[in-house]
Image 1 (spheres, rainbow, N blue to C red):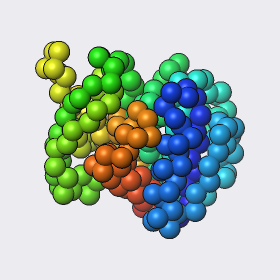
Image 2: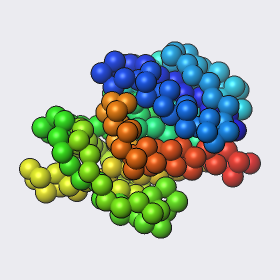
Image 3: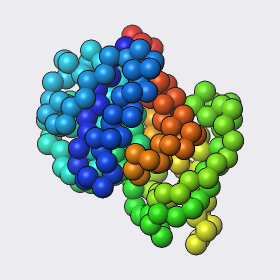
Length: 213
């Protein structure tokens, strides 16, 4: 199987380090992984359609229409997409088509880096099966989310009692899309559950190309 990880944007999320961690997990599962630090990688739709998985790891910034058209077109036609934290959920703030495809957009992380709990809400799904609730010391993401998302894990904010999705899966036409808000910096993936969720989510998303035919 083939995957493309495109990393860049705001350096505070350590995109290069996170990209290499994700690439390593995919290679453990026998993926041929290409790493790219340019959004121009999204321009060539024909090349993207040879992939099983695209992993954007690009916080904020802007994306050109042709780049976005290639990315969205590939997912629409069955290429899986997966990512985490701001690398997928706070990218290209002016690109509403992108946000619609992802199924959510970052709004705030009240209190900055804090202690919080992640609650598994779907124990039957392959992404979260066998995982218990767990603790994080990181940014707790408050997001705008699409109500059609299949939510796998949540967190509850102490200041207002709001329960917010942490991980979800969805379809974008023929393509599978997976998102986890965990992973502010590379060391967050030292939490075994956080790394397991994104790894399984990537593997789930990568299957859509095969299933789409």
